Length: 258
Ligand code: ADP
Image 1 (cartoon, rainbow, N blue to C red):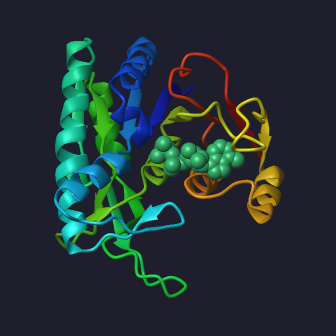
Image 2: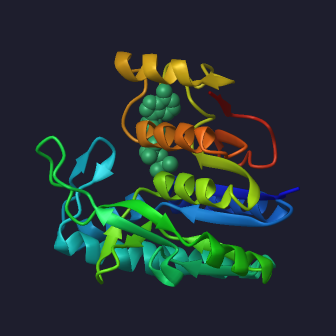
């Protein structure tokens, strides 16, 4: 029988708010058994970029990554955010190991080709996960903490959506573990009306996703979140939940169903 593994993703807006981040970390620390943390960091990079006179360009919830931006996100996601998160987890007794997708070739990706006339720049779509290496770290008692950066095998860092990283890692690890994936963010889960916090949809069926994407009720960052989640569910991940950052240890949120 496969051992359980939790893959948890924390969104950028939660990391930015110290109280919310603490609430998330308390839940993450309390989570029993092997676990992997994947973090975002978008808004922090945007803010630091603005201080440096750079402007963020977003298309459908994804940042367009030019030469200066890939340097910025490498410093902010792979440096500041990743190492602060690792240090905090260490202070809470978790043997966190802060990594990017380039470290141990955890995730190799391909630079996204120009899509519908949009050049995303240094953005990567994952092609290969080093699940063996992640497994060895977990077996050694480590808790990988992964920044949303990958590499192309030719020396370039590629900016990669954190939900995509979490979904891809969950999928690859499902060969060796019984994987549960939780994508946590500021809201309660998938909402019928994004402006109505009472409109949580649970369980959330794949057919709803298709309908709500077409009607525009699901948009921006929620689209890659759900695309990756359903792909993971179709490929052997046991469960996927989209939930609030302080609900890792509950069953609140939207449990996805295919
Ligand atoms: P994070 O980086 O915090 O994980 P994203 O910004 O990538 O989150 O995606 C979450 C956002 O998706 C929400 O803040 C919300 O604005 C948006 N969204 C769009 N449609 C929905 C929906 N139907 N339910 C919940 N959130 C939605």
